[in-house]
Each structure stands twice: as structure tokens, then as C-alpha cells.
Image 1 (cartoon, rainbow over the protein chains, first blue to last red):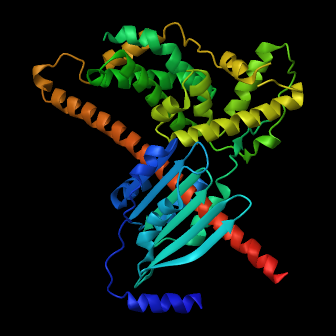
Image 2 (cartoon, rainbow over the protein chains, first blue to last red):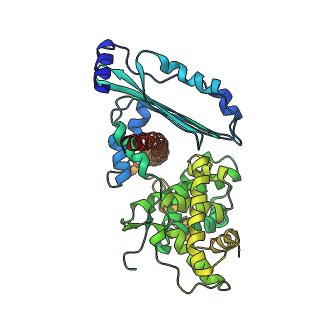
Image 3 (cartoon, rainbow over the protein chains, first blue to last red):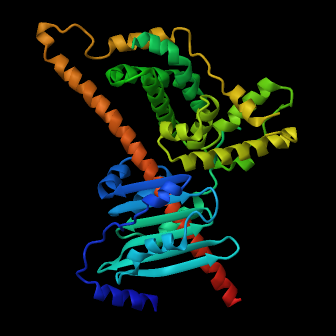
Length: 174
Length: 163
Length: 99
């Protein structure tokens, strides 16, 4: 059913505008945050960064493959000192551009226990997925991700799953 | 700013960052020399003694990170499986220091650099983030994780450690 | 015993070799562009200067590249972890409804 929905969406969107960065106005939120991560990488910067990603490092090689052909990666993550520093209206303002016909929400999860939600949206174009957006909320953190271009969601998720515990080098002789 | 004076003033800092990152005295000295050679080439751009200090920490930290990554890959195991430090006693400070340096040397490069900047240079996370060019959130989380792992490894040998 | 105090003690700065400064100054003196230009190699000085500039630019570019790489890795890590979290939740719910 999902494949059919994507095909219909692709037909409707044939000849649509090229994928563009989402316009998220987060200045007021940043002013209230105790810590902010703000990463803005357009196509040129991604291509530049690719030259410094090692083929010998497993993770870097995977990332290099993942970002090949992408037009932009934009991440904003806000940490707050206590819960309640951002509102449902704030979150809805970030959802607004994703209500357009070319965006489709493919996943929405909510954990009552942890108070966490994750919403994943994809932008469909004639070639398939032309972009992705994530809105993730926790009591003291709000994260916005926008990827412009054809992204492999499985590979991205796989990378996110094992970046966790750092490995440690030990002396071969020991 | 007089160059030879700058070298004498900062040589311990630059060498120590490299040594604590790489644990190879000869390589650390060579890297430190390269850093000062670069400083000489960029001397005209330095605006103040504070700028020199920042520049040296940043260049040394990044070059040590590069060198650490470039060195021959060794088998990766989790710190949980790394060998316990031997002959560690609660009163044997030099031994404890050696054990700590070895454990930190076994951390991933970025975490290692963060620990070195924190405990050798006494930089706070915001300053470390500026020097290493990484987000302050990353510095905080990596530092927290590194300390937790070190604490755990040492506590197996020493028992309770007050933090 | 306080771990952070022990770390400060363990990571005190150390001096390099006693002749470190002299060796640095010797390398600086030997670097291209420092010698007296002679008539028959006058062309070498601007070339050496250009090489030094290029080397400086290359180094700056390298650090810009490393910085961009760090940003890419962090961005992918953040995006991947959120996506992974959602995926795991879906898998968990699917498993529950199937069992």
C-alpha cells in the first residue's frame, strides 16, 4: 500500500520543483535553549567534506556513500534546562511546511513513558525520495533534521544505530 | 611577538598535547616541531598572545587527532574488555597516573583529545568545543562517557572512588 | 580519591627535549624563502613564497575540510539516531501486535 501511495505521489509530482531546504524559523527557540547544535551543510560543503572522509574508516566510508549526491543536510537540536521550555505551537510551526502535498509522513512514534515523539517525513519527487525531514521531541530536547536529496533511509538508520558506544584501540602485543 | 620566546613559552603545552594523544615521544616531538613551524608561517596573522594560545591548542589538537587516526589500525575492542591496569594501589599515585594515561590512550581519538584538553589544559567544554571545532554538546557527552568508563575500569581495581 | 584530580595530576604538562627550541629555530632558518636571494636564483624566491602561501592555504583548507567532515558525521549521527529510534519503536509495536 505504501508503494502504491508513493507511485501515485510520484505521478502527481512529475515535473515538481527540485528539492529545497525547509524554511524553519527557530531563532526564538534557540534563544531559550541552553545548548544548541546548528549544522548547515549545502551541496558544495558536502562535496568538500566528502574529500576528507576516509575510505579506510568503516563509519566514514558508510557516511561517504550515504551523502553522495545529497544536496543538503540541515540539523538543529535544542537542549533546554527543564521541561516545558518549548510548546506544542512551536512544534506545530515546524510541521507547517510539511503539510504540503509533496511531503508525506511515513512514521510517527510516541512514547508515553519517556515523553518522546519522532516523526519522519519524506518528500517525493519523480525519481522517488527527494528529501527527508525528522521532528523529534523529548521533554528537554527538540531536534529538527532536513535532508535534501535522495537519501537511503535504511543506511541512515543503520548508521544511527551503531554510532553509540565508542570502540577502543588496544595494543596487539597485549 | 618574538618567535623563539613563543616557542619556549608554549613548547611544554604543545608537546604534551601531542604526547598524551599519541604516547610516542619521538612522534610527539616531531609533531610539536611541525606545529611551531606552521606558527612561524602564520605569525603575522596572530592578533594577541591569547590568539597564539588558541591557535596552538587548535592546530596541535587537530594534528594529533589526524596522526592518531593515521597510525596503523589496531583491533577495536570495547573498553569494557580492555585489560585491567596492573599493580594499581590507592596510594600508588605514579602508578595510578600511568594507568590513567594508558586508559585514556585507549579511548577513541576524539574522546582522548577532549580528555587531554580538559585535564591537561583545564579548558571547559565550551572552550574545548571552540578549540577542537566540535559542538559543545558532543564535548559534554563524550567527556561524561569517558569519565564513566574510566571510573568503572578503575573501580574494579580500587573499589569505591570518590568523584 | 577524586578521579578528576587524579586525571589533572596524570596529565600535567611535560617538557620536550632540552634542545627542542633550538631544533625548531634551526628548521625555521632552513625553511624555503629564508636564504639570501642570489641574482641567478631571484626567480626562486617568489616561487618559494608562493609555495609557502600555497602550503598555508592547503593547511587552512585541510582544517576547513576536517571541520566540515566533523559536522557531517555529527549530522548523520543525530539524524540516524532519531530515525533508528523511530524504527525500533515501530518494530517493537509490530512484534507486539503479531505475538
